[in-house]
Each structure stands twice: as structure tokens, then as C-alpha cells.
Length: 446
Ligand code: GDP
Image (tube, rainbow, N blue to C red; front, side, top):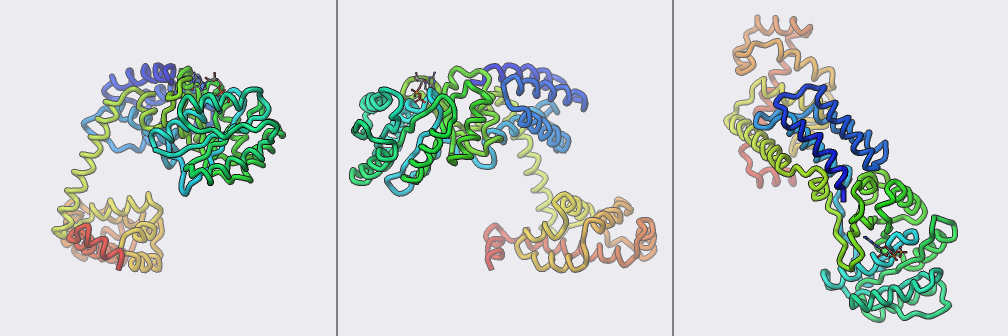
């Protein structure tokens, strides 16, 4: 899967990473090509647009790491964004909520999407890999021989199927499956519902009725990945009407584009839990966003390189800072960095609230009217100091204080407040530096 997209992106990034210095224009051109590649892979337009916007934003704000080139950094950003678009905020690939037995799993989808095949594949996986006792039941009373198809597959994989009773309606079959699962001590019972060629009222109300009878732990939509955007639309429709917990994309063995996979999560908010990669009973894989992103980009080495460089840089910076704080060295440069951080994070109160033991200080600051304009004033005051004064604010004499305050259009009292804050924060940092992990935790909990 994803071969075409992968080839296209490979070309773009090969060129980009070969260049030493990148101009803004280089990055823009590359991202335009990425956008075209995504659209050609049948990724929906809004998803492609948001993708590029997000990458652009992150590329502009990225910390520069000396040991990697800007091109390599862009690759890493695109890689992370791919994971984000594939996984959303949580990665639920391959996870099924089973809980207390017997767990009903409802399989829904259009006809020919691979529902029956996937039901059997999943049953096999649950019984062999997870050692669950599984019962399968076909509720497909429309399609001739659908029930027999599941029975044959059951025999093939060694999983029980509910005995077929001619003339029963889907709700009655579901009820019988539920009873049989309880009596028979099964961990899971899977209900393979009937499909239609397209979404219609009859299909939906039938699935709804079954859903209400069994109250499924998982409702998995099985869709043909080859249908691209249609698969995403089908998922939206089913989710609106029935409420699905996840998606299985089938025929990904034949899909070189992969657009459905890339748009699914962003459009429906529902995770892709599995992908079907063939007709055989073990051609089912969990959908792992990280691995898929890696496969699409095919630039694992570069991603690892940038990750390593970033970690090293951050660790070095943090360690250097921590060492200085422990020694009680917290100067105006440090304060300025903190203030700028606060600006980014939505003000000082918001940040202090998150620090253990600093909630009281946050309140005081709040009362003193510490808003964004004050943060800006304080940064201006620090900017008016000389290098020496920033490193050692104790050097500031009354005359210099007056000059600095006046230079920033403020009062000396404002500068004194800033100095007090620097001392207080320095003390706090020193204390926090001395507390080990245990100490921080203890204080947070007390
Ligand atoms: P249903 O109508 O949704 O129950 O669809 P079926 O399970 O009967 O599948 C329809 C056809 O698609 C069958 O021939 C399956 O073997 C085939 N099929 C299902 N999943 C996959 C897959 O992941 N890859 C491929 N290549 N074929 C599949």
C-alpha cells in the first residue's frame, strides 16, 4: 500500500535533503509538491490543505539544530504530521474493547466490502493470538449463501458459528447469538450484518435494531480501501446513523494510493483499527500509524537522525540550565526566556498553575495584573540592560535603574518588581532543582 504516494514524496524529499541551506521558497515549493502528491493519492482536499498548513507552521517555528540540515528537519516534520493525521490524538490501532465476556462485536458495511472475510479474519486472530473463545453469527438473510459462507470460513479457521435456522430475522438471530454466547461461555460473539450495494434506510434501520438488542462493545465498519473518498463518506454515514468505534480498511494490498487511510481519521474522527491485505485468513494487520508513516516516507534514517539531534540538544540545554539553577544562578537572560515562554503559553498564570507549589504565586501574580502587556514591558526592560547587567542584575545602581526604566517608558518601581521576581523565581528554581523526582512528587501531592 501507499507505493505511489511514497514514490512521489521520495522524489520531493530527496531533492530537499540534498541541499545544504534552504530558503523559504525551497520549502514552499517542496510543500506544494507534497500537496499535489496527497491529492493524487486521493486524500480529501481539506485534509491535504490542513496538512500543509500545519507543516508550514511547524517548519517556521522549528528550533534549529546544527547537526541536521533544514531539509532533514522538514522531512521529520512531515513524518510527525503524517502520524498525527493517521492516528489523531490517540493511537488505538488493533485494540478491541472486550471487557467482561461475552463481548458483542458488530460488523457493519456495504456489500462486497469484505465484511464476512474480515469477520472470520478477526475471529481467527482473537482465538489464536488472544486465546479468546469466539462465536460468529451471520445476520445476512438477504444474500443467498451468505450464512453458509461464514460457516465454511468458521470450519476452516476452527471457530464456532451459530447454527443456521432458516427463516429467522436478523434481530432474532442476534438474540439467539447473545444467549448462546452466554450459555456457551464464549468471550466474544461477532455479528456479521447484511450489506447493501449502497446505504439505504432499510439497511440502517436493521443494523440499528440489532445494535439496540446486543449493545455492542465494538462496532467495526468494514470498507473497501480502494474506493478512496467513497470509503470515507461511507464511514461518515455509518457513524452518524449507527455510531462506529473503528474502521477496517480492506484491499489495501491493491491500493497504491492510500487516500482513504490518510483522510479517515481526520474526517470521521474514528481510528482505523485494522487493514486487510489479501484474501487469505491471516491477511489482516493492525494499523500502526508510525509504521505506516515510515512506510509512506521511506526515510526512517533521516527521521531517526533528527530525533536524536533534537533529543541531544534539548537534553544538553536542560542540563546546563538545571546545573546553573541548582547553584542559584538565575539571571535576567533566564527570566527573559521564561517570560517569552509564558507569552507563548498564554500568560504567566497559566504556566505557574501547572507547576507544583506555585499556584499561590500564580494567584498573586494574577492579582497584580500580570497580563500580556506586562510581559511585553518586562521583556523590554530586560532588553534595555547591558549584557553584564543581564548576567548579574545586582550590578544595577540607582542611576542605571532610572535610565533603563525611562528607556522603556516605565517607572523605577516597575523595574524593582522585575528584580524581585527574578530573585523569587531564582529561589524557586533552586529549590526545585534540589528536589529529586520524589521531592517534586511529594510536594505536588501535599
Ligand atoms: P462482504 O460482502 O462485505 O461480506 O464481502 P466478502 O467478505 O464476501 O468479500 C468480498 C471479496 O473481497 C471476497 O472475494 C474476498 O476474498 C475479498 N477480500 C476481502 N478482503 C480483502 C482484502 O483485504 N484484500 C483482497 N485482495 N481481497 C479481499
